[in-house]
Image 1 (tube, rainbow, N blue to C red):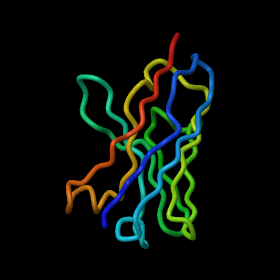
Image 2: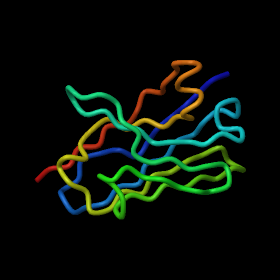
Image 3: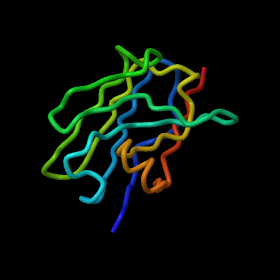
Image 4: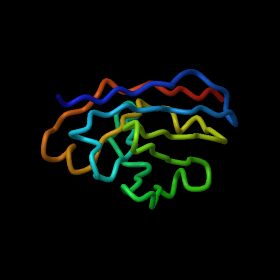
Length: 117
């Protein structure tokens, strides 16, 4: 069964921190790279962080130095630690495996992050 469950979003003031968590079914998580995406109102969904099965990471320039992605291969979870949040980080955040996102088109419900100025 394909399943992605994101949690941890909320309302925070600019400069604050949040930690997002994602529980993924084994069929998605497996040995695939996993990523965190976000979609702001009126904008396309964008990939902000990705982590390989071995822990190599890459970040979008807009979040580099502020966000940290991590994964627990034993628990099939992937987290996103977000520090120094800015109002422009406001979006619905989703996790997914980039390959699965393309091949299945399946997405979880996401978690809303709102950063107030």
